[in-house]
Length: 434
Image 1 (cartoon, rainbow, N blue to C red):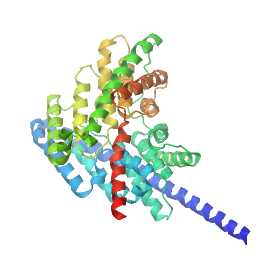
Image 2: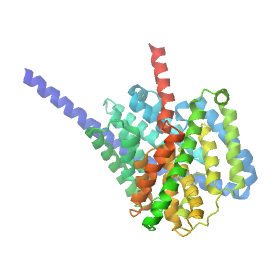
Image 3: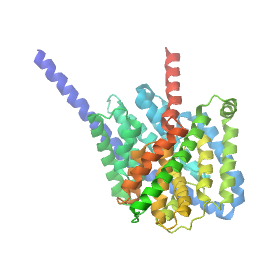
Image 4: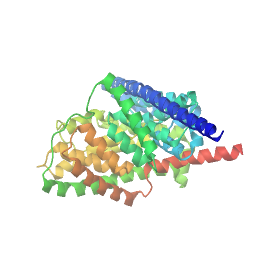
């Protein structure tokens, strides 16, 4: 009898494992399709706004702030779980699985997140789709596991988040690195299999439909050893400080107990209008260069086809910070890479004899690591989005220095700090239910 019970238990465990893998595979396929649709919608939204502002640039002084206010009002009213990046929500759910069964990771929230992020791009917001894709991916995974009647685990959410990053940038290695650095505190072998499986499936779907592409285009430039030793400390220290300042600003607006920040949080719609006005003014002043993700400008810098101006980095920093603290849905990955490119452009004035794309790439690394404090993810993302392996050692050196410099400015890692608000909400809900 004992052997029969053991055999039945073993069969049930195998069946659960098979259902879990099927649910993860189905979720990854759906995610791959949605990521492609999301990218297309985001690009079209930016195109429409670009067309509008080219003929009516001063009307954006009304459109952008009113659009921000309306989007934040709708988000707070209909789906508060859809606000902001999306990565903190998933991070909170991996630490408290009860949150996976709340509105934080549901399909309605995911739909609202997708549409409102596109809406922010449609009115000129400086946001990316990477963070939202992570939250949407996790919501899809939760839904698939509910349908298959498989218990939710942190590993499934981690796999979904990793697949989301990989699908957004077409960077499978970066998806795995992001799972290790940001989403998983303990990266077990079972989780590793789920992550790699989800990343591969989502990547194959994207590859089959969108084709094999390099996000920023292929970059061949490298630096001499002497230049590496001179530029990497500068890019790492200054970029880390600038990125740490951005993280500190975001955390202060999100959770500071100072009366000024508390007053701002009590009036989210008015604050969103003010942030939108800042974005609009900066956009008008720069001829529209700071609106949207900043992908086109960054790509030109990486390809060495941009003439250094000096103002793009600071202007994009201001537009991205204003968009991020407004509370509107949207990610900060792509805009932060764009700000980093502008910072790297500033470095080219100090190092005019070195290849501009290589210097820009180091600037992107320094600033991006300063913001997210995930050096491995940053290096792999930039290596995969430029197909440049010759710069990997300078990138790693810059990332290590930037991580240390950012920590001096902002002790708390950005996404971890933002996730605490969602964790507290989960605890408050549990106490009320008890």
